[in-house]
Every structure is written in C-alpha cells, then in structure tokens.
Image (tube, rainbow, N blue to C red; front, side):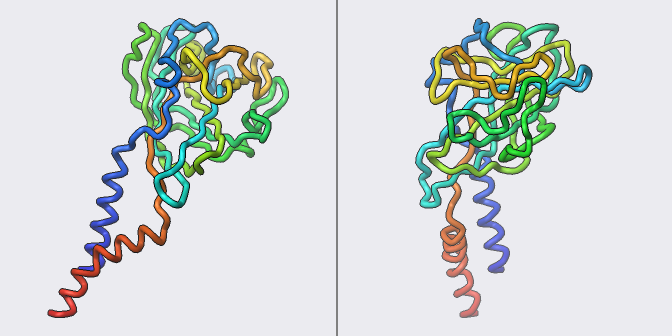
Length: 241
C-alpha cells in the first residue's frame, strides 16, 4: 500500500507539471510580433536541396522558486511565417539548445558554407511534432506549440540560445517571426547554401517570437522527503493493524 501511495503522489506531481506555465516570454516584453518585419531569416532543414538554415535567439531564466536554482523546460511555443512559396503543413521541427560561447554569441560557430558544429549543442530534439494554428499575421503566419520528448534542464541566470528549425523542403521557405523589440542579445543566423556563417549576428533590433513552458526543479532530497511524509501516516496505520 505504501508503494501505491508513493506512486500516486508521483503521478499527481507529474499531472500538475503538465500545466506548463510560461517561464520565459520573448513576445510580450518585446511589444508582440512584428508581422511586417523584413528582417526575418530562414530557419529550415531541407532534405531536397540539402541546405541547413537556422536562427538562434538567447534567453535567461529568472530565479527559480526552488533552492536547486534549476528549471525544467518542457514546452516551446512560437510564431512562424512562410517567407516565400505557398504555406504548407509542417509536421515536425528540430529544437536545439545551444550554450553561450562566453562572448555573447551561440556556440557551434562555423565558416561560411558549413552547418553549425552540432557537437557543441547542449540538446538536440529532432523531428518534434508540433501543433499549429493561424498566427494573426495573415495567411502565411502560424502559431506553433510543441512538447519536448524529454525536459531540458536549465540553470537560472545562465544565458542559453534556442534554435527552432522547420523540417520542410523548399519551396516554401520558412522562418521564426520577429518581435518589435529586443531583450537580451540579438538573434544570430546561418545559411550554408547562401554561405552565411553560423552564427552571424542580426543587425536589426528585433527578437524571435517564442515562449518557454516548464517548472522549477525540486531538490531530489526535498522531493523524496515530501513523498515520505505523505506516505508515513498510512504506513503507521498499517503497522497498528
């Protein structure tokens, strides 16, 4: 019975976590999406022409409410736009987390005509299914949402970079929508087919439109103590019987 109670508590915690509150917002503080921006860059992995185009933008999570100081990122939401061609459903995206290279740029930089150094990425989630809905910026604009197959663990106060890349063949050409303003650093992009080096800093004062959902990571010892304390009363009643 004690094991059953313990399992029930764990399942309850997992259900609560599925609400995925926003823990980083790159849209609202930036004045919302700038649907008419001409600074949008392609972020697409094409299997037909064989090109690799990507845009990475930075984020830093605030202080965690838990003493661990860590966060679990479980969901990514973003706005994208078809830059050229007829909009088509995109079933999956690649979501990649990069560390900062300690100079205010994403790690993985490489020369023109080469893809980024994926060995330097912190986490690569390939072919992540995403839902889509009209994005409010006309027939080429869409809102997307995806749950990560495994949570990405991030420390508070640490600068990270996220790349959201569509798995779709050209045409059409797809990119992450821009916002009106910039918080933190400017986005960086690369395009091996057009010999744009990874990572080239954007000269425009805009960010990519995305939010991150997740929750604080409890200390393992603290979580174990909660489960133990919840189960002790039942265990005592069982021992009396």
